[in-house]
Image 1 (cartoon, rainbow, N blue to C red):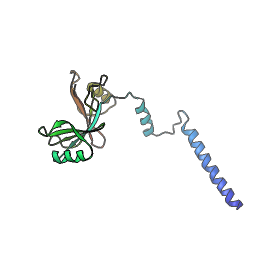
Image 2 (spheres, rainbow, N blue to C red):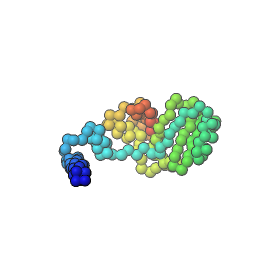
Image 3 (cartoon, helix red, strand yellow):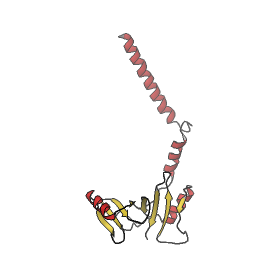
Image 4 (cartoon, rainbow, N blue to C red):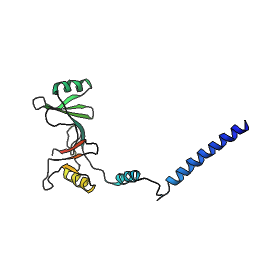
Length: 172
């Protein structure tokens, strides 16, 4: 019985010593214990946030009517677009899905600077050309670029490390 108590006390002491020393060393400034991934997360958090506007996913669909019915069964309603123009924007509360037939090959993550999720104009927003400058300063490679000598509607595209296309599409 005495041996079991000593073993338990020993393991408990080792656990608390390890826990305490981990917390002390990782909270010291300039401890050089961190890794590059943690360092890059910290650097990213200190950069200014971009105002990208409304978010939606743009889906390339095979059958527009079948996709419309499917998303209606998930509670979405048609918000914009038309069957005749081969696309619909569908909405469920703050969630937006664009379904497009024959317009592009893969699905696209879409942001609309200057708009909220109801396609209402936002007073303060980052112009797509400013977003483009920020992305370039962060060494993000752009797939397409906006003409920086223009104002108003424009778009840019980037591809994330997994091949997902991101469209930043400003309509005003």
